[in-house]
Image (cartoon, rainbow, N blue to C red; front, side, top):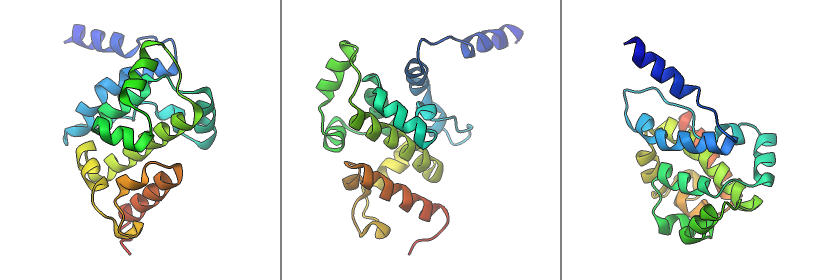
Length: 174
Protein backbone atom coordinates (compact mmCIF):
# COMPACT_ATOMS: atom_id res chain seq x y z
CA UNK A 1 0.00 0.00 0.00
CA UNK A 2 2.85 2.39 0.81
CA UNK A 3 4.37 1.73 -2.62
CA UNK A 4 1.08 2.69 -4.25
CA UNK A 5 0.99 5.94 -2.28
CA UNK A 6 4.58 6.68 -3.25
CA UNK A 7 3.78 6.07 -6.93
CA UNK A 8 0.71 8.29 -6.70
CA UNK A 9 2.71 11.04 -4.99
CA UNK A 10 5.40 10.82 -7.66
CA UNK A 11 2.76 10.98 -10.40
CA UNK A 12 1.20 14.07 -8.78
CA UNK A 13 4.56 15.86 -8.56
CA UNK A 14 5.34 15.53 -12.25
CA UNK A 15 6.97 18.66 -13.62
CA UNK A 16 5.54 20.41 -16.66
CA UNK A 17 7.26 22.74 -19.09
CA UNK A 18 4.26 25.10 -19.35
CA UNK A 19 0.85 25.65 -17.81
CA UNK A 20 -0.65 24.42 -21.09
CA UNK A 21 1.25 21.10 -20.71
CA UNK A 22 -0.16 20.63 -17.22
CA UNK A 23 -3.67 21.51 -18.37
CA UNK A 24 -3.41 19.12 -21.31
CA UNK A 25 -2.33 16.30 -19.00
CA UNK A 26 -5.30 17.05 -16.72
CA UNK A 27 -7.69 16.99 -19.68
CA UNK A 28 -6.97 13.34 -20.41
CA UNK A 29 -7.76 12.43 -16.82
CA UNK A 30 -10.73 14.75 -16.51
CA UNK A 31 -13.85 13.05 -17.85
CA UNK A 32 -13.44 9.92 -15.81
CA UNK A 33 -13.71 11.96 -12.62
CA UNK A 34 -16.66 14.08 -13.73
CA UNK A 35 -18.71 11.32 -15.30
CA UNK A 36 -18.71 9.08 -12.23
CA UNK A 37 -21.28 10.39 -9.72
CA UNK A 38 -19.49 8.90 -6.74
CA UNK A 39 -16.19 10.69 -7.33
CA UNK A 40 -15.17 14.15 -6.25
CA UNK A 41 -15.22 16.84 -8.92
CA UNK A 42 -11.74 17.82 -9.99
CA UNK A 43 -10.71 21.21 -11.30
CA UNK A 44 -11.30 21.76 -15.00
CA UNK A 45 -8.12 21.64 -17.08
CA UNK A 46 -6.87 25.10 -18.02
CA UNK A 47 -8.75 26.52 -15.00
CA UNK A 48 -5.80 28.67 -13.94
CA UNK A 49 -5.86 30.28 -17.38
CA UNK A 50 -9.44 31.58 -16.94
CA UNK A 51 -9.69 31.79 -13.14
CA UNK A 52 -10.18 35.56 -13.21
CA UNK A 53 -10.62 38.20 -15.92
CA UNK A 54 -6.93 39.19 -15.93
CA UNK A 55 -5.78 35.57 -16.27
CA UNK A 56 -8.30 35.07 -19.08
CA UNK A 57 -7.14 38.20 -20.89
CA UNK A 58 -3.44 37.39 -20.50
CA UNK A 59 -3.87 33.75 -21.53
CA UNK A 60 -5.99 34.70 -24.53
CA UNK A 61 -3.52 37.31 -25.75
CA UNK A 62 -0.62 34.84 -25.40
CA UNK A 63 -2.62 32.27 -27.34
CA UNK A 64 -3.32 28.71 -26.27
CA UNK A 65 -1.48 25.73 -27.62
CA UNK A 66 -3.70 24.29 -30.34
CA UNK A 67 -3.98 21.07 -28.33
CA UNK A 68 -6.32 22.95 -25.96
CA UNK A 69 -8.98 22.87 -28.69
CA UNK A 70 -8.64 19.09 -29.00
CA UNK A 71 -8.83 18.77 -25.22
CA UNK A 72 -12.05 20.81 -25.29
CA UNK A 73 -13.55 18.45 -27.88
CA UNK A 74 -12.70 15.46 -25.67
CA UNK A 75 -14.11 17.01 -22.51
CA UNK A 76 -17.20 18.59 -24.01
CA UNK A 77 -18.34 15.70 -26.15
CA UNK A 78 -18.72 18.06 -29.11
CA UNK A 79 -18.74 16.35 -32.47
CA UNK A 80 -16.29 17.70 -35.02
CA UNK A 81 -19.18 19.45 -36.79
CA UNK A 82 -20.39 21.05 -33.54
CA UNK A 83 -16.86 22.25 -32.81
CA UNK A 84 -16.47 23.66 -36.32
CA UNK A 85 -19.86 25.45 -36.12
CA UNK A 86 -19.07 26.93 -32.75
CA UNK A 87 -15.43 27.93 -33.20
CA UNK A 88 -15.45 28.70 -36.93
CA UNK A 89 -12.39 26.60 -37.66
CA UNK A 90 -11.92 23.03 -38.79
CA UNK A 91 -10.61 20.19 -36.67
CA UNK A 92 -8.11 19.52 -39.47
CA UNK A 93 -6.74 23.05 -39.03
CA UNK A 94 -6.44 22.46 -35.28
CA UNK A 95 -4.56 19.20 -35.91
CA UNK A 96 -2.22 21.02 -38.31
CA UNK A 97 -1.59 23.74 -35.70
CA UNK A 98 -0.95 21.07 -33.08
CA UNK A 99 1.49 19.18 -35.31
CA UNK A 100 3.33 22.42 -36.13
CA UNK A 101 3.29 23.61 -32.49
CA UNK A 102 1.39 26.79 -33.39
CA UNK A 103 -0.59 28.84 -30.91
CA UNK A 104 -4.23 29.74 -31.45
CA UNK A 105 -5.07 33.39 -32.05
CA UNK A 106 -6.37 35.54 -29.20
CA UNK A 107 -10.05 35.43 -30.22
CA UNK A 108 -10.17 31.65 -30.56
CA UNK A 109 -8.15 31.20 -27.36
CA UNK A 110 -10.63 33.39 -25.48
CA UNK A 111 -13.66 31.47 -26.80
CA UNK A 112 -12.09 28.14 -25.88
CA UNK A 113 -11.16 29.29 -22.37
CA UNK A 114 -14.64 30.74 -21.82
CA UNK A 115 -16.09 27.46 -23.10
CA UNK A 116 -13.98 25.50 -20.60
CA UNK A 117 -15.34 27.78 -17.85
CA UNK A 118 -18.87 27.30 -19.17
CA UNK A 119 -18.50 23.52 -19.11
CA UNK A 120 -17.09 23.65 -15.60
CA UNK A 121 -20.23 25.46 -14.41
CA UNK A 122 -22.53 23.27 -16.51
CA UNK A 123 -21.00 20.07 -15.15
CA UNK A 124 -21.35 21.35 -11.60
CA UNK A 125 -25.06 21.98 -12.20
CA UNK A 126 -25.98 19.01 -14.41
CA UNK A 127 -23.62 16.43 -12.92
CA UNK A 128 -21.75 15.40 -16.07
CA UNK A 129 -20.40 16.74 -19.33
CA UNK A 130 -22.86 14.50 -21.18
CA UNK A 131 -25.89 15.91 -19.32
CA UNK A 132 -24.71 19.47 -19.87
CA UNK A 133 -24.04 18.82 -23.56
CA UNK A 134 -27.60 17.47 -23.86
CA UNK A 135 -29.00 20.60 -22.16
CA UNK A 136 -27.16 22.78 -24.68
CA UNK A 137 -29.36 21.28 -27.42
CA UNK A 138 -32.70 22.11 -25.77
CA UNK A 139 -34.36 25.53 -26.17
CA UNK A 140 -34.02 27.55 -22.95
CA UNK A 141 -36.78 29.90 -21.80
CA UNK A 142 -34.28 32.34 -20.27
CA UNK A 143 -32.48 32.58 -23.61
CA UNK A 144 -35.56 33.53 -25.61
CA UNK A 145 -36.30 29.86 -26.33
CA UNK A 146 -33.05 29.56 -28.26
CA UNK A 147 -30.83 26.52 -27.97
CA UNK A 148 -27.80 27.43 -25.84
CA UNK A 149 -25.57 25.63 -28.34
CA UNK A 150 -26.62 28.14 -31.03
CA UNK A 151 -25.28 30.99 -28.87
CA UNK A 152 -21.85 29.50 -28.20
CA UNK A 153 -20.30 30.91 -31.37
CA UNK A 154 -19.79 34.34 -29.75
CA UNK A 155 -18.31 35.46 -26.44
CA UNK A 156 -21.54 37.37 -25.71
CA UNK A 157 -23.54 34.19 -26.30
CA UNK A 158 -21.31 32.25 -23.90
CA UNK A 159 -21.87 34.99 -21.30
CA UNK A 160 -25.66 34.73 -21.77
CA UNK A 161 -25.45 30.95 -21.26
CA UNK A 162 -23.38 31.49 -18.10
CA UNK A 163 -26.07 33.85 -16.79
CA UNK A 164 -28.78 31.29 -17.57
CA UNK A 165 -26.81 28.63 -15.67
CA UNK A 166 -26.60 30.93 -12.65
CA UNK A 167 -30.38 31.41 -12.81
CA UNK A 168 -30.88 27.63 -12.98
CA UNK A 169 -28.45 27.11 -10.12
CA UNK A 170 -30.49 29.39 -7.88
CA UNK A 171 -33.88 28.16 -9.07
CA UNK A 172 -34.80 31.37 -10.94
CA UNK A 173 -36.53 29.83 -13.94
CA UNK A 174 -38.44 32.93 -15.04
